Image (tube, rainbow, N blue to C red):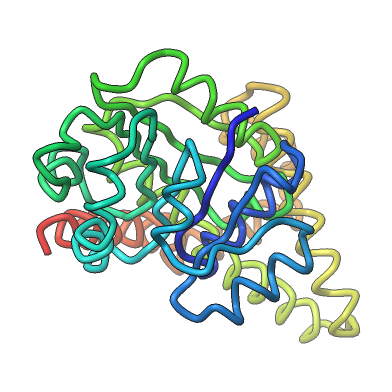
Length: 271
């Protein structure tokens, strides 16, 4: 039975911990956070364990998820260096956006250079088991390590193995994407309110519609354009709405959002 630790209980660390506690016995999961009370509150909710500090977490766990901001990764690993130098069998999984596996390894002490490393980029939807995550592995990580991480994340949603060269691109679409979609759901609900729907119902209708439309893309395998065409009757109300979206630059705005996120991801990796 693998012991798993999450260092950092922010939005992403908490979401991944929730997913792990669905896949594993919660007692296999340990939380560590700079503010201990935050880790304690989450552990009480999930029924998992709390580490008094990062050193305890890495000492007792086999698989350690580093759920910290990119600029904190180096100091956190420097703090953990004494434990890593003395321990065998530890596997590190970085969730820091933009930080490559080579950069991550450069943060390790000399005696820990053979530590297996993986890089994970999830989105916050893993919290409810509907996430989309990308996973890549350093040559130091075996197939067994990859499969173990996949098992830990088995209740998080979809996990795709990708080349590291595509991690920033993945992050720009799927990692950042929920924040691009939420304003669109809100805007659709605003439109519903403008035409007379109560706010609560308008929000529910818009969100469920987005959920169903996304499921249609994934489950039918049809191109989104073809699915769109199937809804648009000649001279109908739907094609009028599509034309309004095109006139106001929906596609261009979405593409620019991904490109802006991609450029920022590359910058984060250089800090």
